[in-house]
Image 1 (cartoon, each protein chain N blue to C red):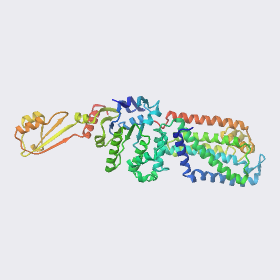
Image 2: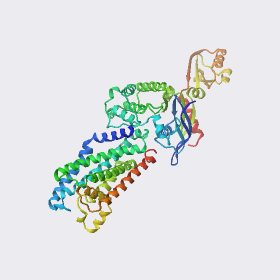
Image 3: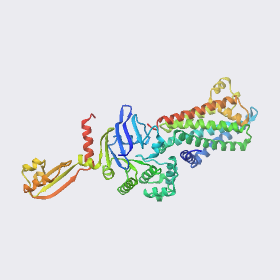
Length: 309
Length: 253
């Protein structure tokens, strides 16, 4: 597998505080990687070290084979960063802001590329508007535009849709997918788990500076996830028939609901067969797949139970 | 041939101060013009001549120097500090600009602002007291060196500072007092001996005195001493600012 960003044993300390603790991670070419974690977990610290905003205390990071500290000019040309905090320079308008950012990267922004970026971010009408006069959502889109002016191989989006309305969030998601289709590798940090579930190919869960798990999203969901089946019965039961109890089902709601949690690869077939054999009359069936949010909460709370606070 | 990255940063820094000319150019010129009118005319009426030049002419080099160094300092200091405050410093830090390019972009723009203020101050004062310059190249070289040194001080202060108050430490406690005590408005020959001795350890005195030699051809100290001191200070300041940027101090955690 082609690794674009290689992180080896990276630690960042601030005095006694360990913000990032010995992380090893490889980001693959062309993927959307979702880095999830609670506030203060170390997500921003990690991507700031890759982008050159912070220097690791120890360990090595390379981007396209270049070391981010030693060969910083090469690695920064390959990276676009959309920071979490909105920033803008009130001295300049949208077009000037984008042209300047391209210039810092040694790129003369063509009219065609400028219009393409403005169009994709729905900022064409604001081309000559002072950045101070933009709404919060527009300022955030301008940040994304600034990160794209030099056509980076890897785009880091640090909480890109914080404070963005639903419609715009969907539009940004579809733009991120389009970028990926064009070959851009994308690393996304978010605490909207729905966003990671929607976009990411692979997920890394980070808590208290340590990477708890890195897996394909689908594998993660099927391994740690579960399918919950709830059968509402026409006539309540006094006790759960033995074959159902043996299969792991539980009786709930005063005997009127049989619930069953199928984890990992467990199939629901044997349970349904047992229900039929017992001749139970089923009034309603409800199934629910665990979401990334359930998996995330489970992983983080398991980590915290096992470690000193 | 300079890189597109450096050219962009330089243009941005120059456009930044040109967009608010009232604050960055006009205001300092008015301040120095007031000094010139108030001191030049009120005292000039009594003093008439210092070291063989009319008093109004005598104070011009010091006023030009004051305008140049204050504005060179303020340009880097306020630009860098505001970038830190607004978070736009990130735009530079994630870019492939080298440390030398970042330093050059800030310093050259600040030198240009210092020289613009100095030139306008000189033009306003010259309208009253004449435009003859004794050693134009020397005067220009000294003023440029002073602007380079003070822009580097401004950059370092802004990188270090965590409040506007700290940004203002340097002009309030260093530039203004040492300039006023550095012979802008008087010749040290006019001072009693103890104050004269103090003036000799004030680095700004050598700067003002050197520029005065460049502009008027008169000086209290050997002009070569001022020039040499200035070369050392400017080189040291630029070197220290480069080392500070390179170390990532306060900018790259």
